Image 1 (cartoon, rainbow, N blue to C red):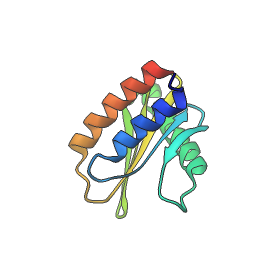
Image 2: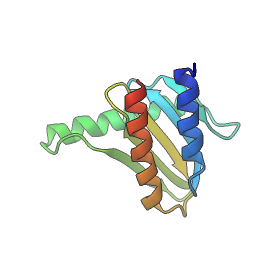
Image 3: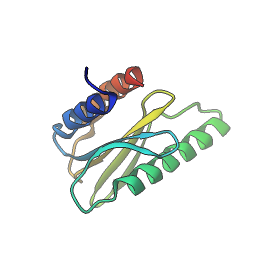
Length: 121
């Protein structure tokens, strides 16, 4: 039987195959890393914790303003994009992309992956 971690790894590996995606990770809502596929030298635990904090802050802000819960948070810099999205009540998925990555296909695949993770957990 395939473990949950192995299934998470497959989801993250599939996301990493989307053009422009450089790293992918799954974390708990409180920022504990479940699994990450990242280039060496990057700190996956810090990446997961800070992304969870960022998404949590966005959820608090939009809820307080009466705008509901955000689907995702996207941070753009000259070196790339960071995208964090909820994957059900227990998890979130996080991607790092290259600066020139188009978001259309990436967001579509990320939403599909979030549904899979939501069902897994």
